[in-house]
Amino acid sequence: MGDQIISGVVTIATAIVGIAIIAVLVSKNANTGTVIQAATGGFASDIEAAVSPITGGGFTGGGISSLTQVG
Image 1 (tube, rainbow, N blue to C red):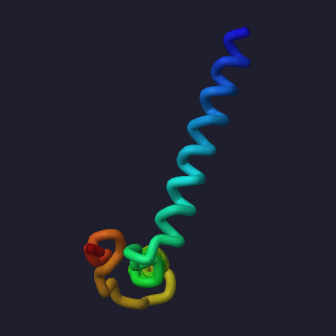
Image 2 (cartoon, rainbow, N blue to C red; image 1 turned 45 degrees about the vertical axis):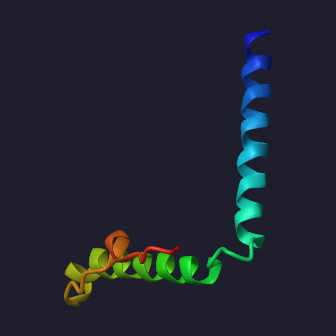
Image 3 (tube, one colour; image 1 turned 30 degrees about the horizontal axis):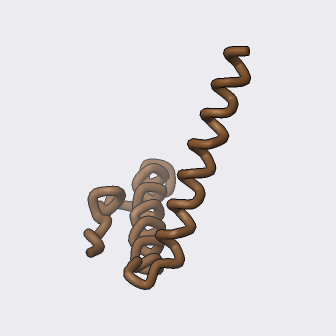
């Protein structure tokens, strides 16, 4: 019985989060493209920094701290 309650709560919470994500993505006020570009650019910098000891490249900074504030 307890597992069914937990499963139901998780299902409802997942649905609420999913609806919120869709609402943000389709909102006219959301700069979805800018956010995705900033996030992927930061992720690329993190990957570059992680492999630089192997490839001999230098660390150029970036990452999560380089995300721009939207809004």
